[in-house]
Length: 134
Image (cartoon, rainbow, N blue to C red):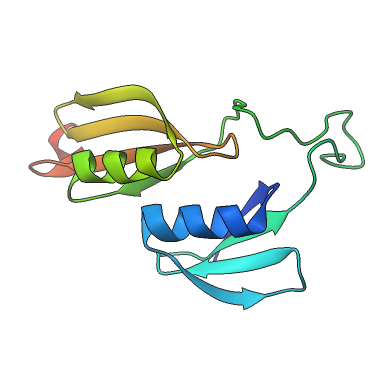
């Protein structure tokens, strides 16, 4: 089974610039004016332009909002140089929510993109998660 990632954004051009600069992704296919496939990672990321205030689904009362919001799902991006990745992301408009911290398995920074989605940068050290796996 393959999978892909969909991210709602309110400004497709700004999202393309952000995800290109910060994660090194390249534009792929477009499906009309409102969606863009970003390639270069292990799974495609589709940027879906949806206006703020539009219904999130037909069964929920929530509407889309692009200020920082919490969700139990987030993406982790593994990098060889977390300090450089954080600096690039901040220059591109991301927010640092928790400074880089070091753990037995590696280093971690909690971030948010300009569209309110949380994500993390990880830099594995030593054997990575195998340092703490049983």
